[in-house]
Image: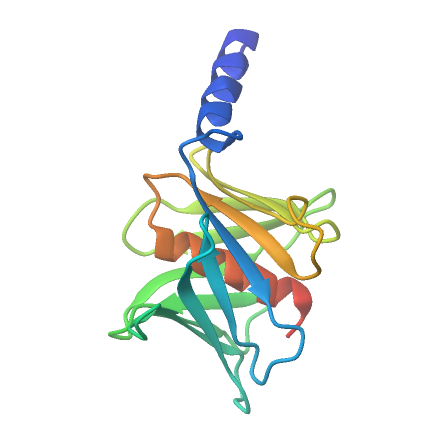
Length: 183
């Protein structure tokens, strides 16, 4: 990749993910004390758009994503008996939407792979200490999860490119949070 190509790619990323970018912005703010890890994901204007319902007292870590009206969007569950950390994202009908799993070897950065059932796979790279992640498809950034935008504890910003399924992007962000927090 030449200098001109990198410059063009950075310019395109700034137009999408910059301060006045076209990416859709969300805020995940967990309640500090909540039974079953329930919290809301808000849009850029502060409206509650997705509820994350953590199911308490289950053998597997289970998180349901519901829209503001209580309609199921997807279910995220840990997979047991796997060599590496793995969570599946299932549609309301039970069919698999994606599988998020941690890379076996990642010496410098934390890496995850998202195997999407009906679409192109996603790669996630990040820093679990700072809670900063970049989601890419074919080397192009399609989503970003960042804690640096907020000073409030356990609050993360999620930016999603317009051509990525929002439910999938938010489910991946929730799965990353669950996998890195060790719930």
